[in-house]
View: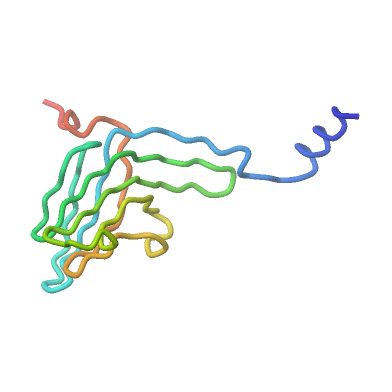
Length: 129
């Protein structure tokens, strides 16, 4: 009986979440838009390295490529701290998504911070001689 339930579950329902594959990455490319000057820059950062902006500090802790049956996505675990902000609610620690960029993102008065890509290879040794 138990075998029939498992057989029915796997073959008659298409649950793509069961077939997800996570690929750990070594770094990330962040798109940083200055809202006052409209200057857009792409910053390549290894994991756990600090990026200092004019008014904040960013750290990417993890970056994952998630490969599914129907849709692929990339997510990054990010810390964003506003310099001089006494209120801890203005700080951000959470996952940002490449596909749904405005669902969960750091709130910064000057910069718009988005995940552009997760890098599988170590970003320090990307350049080849």
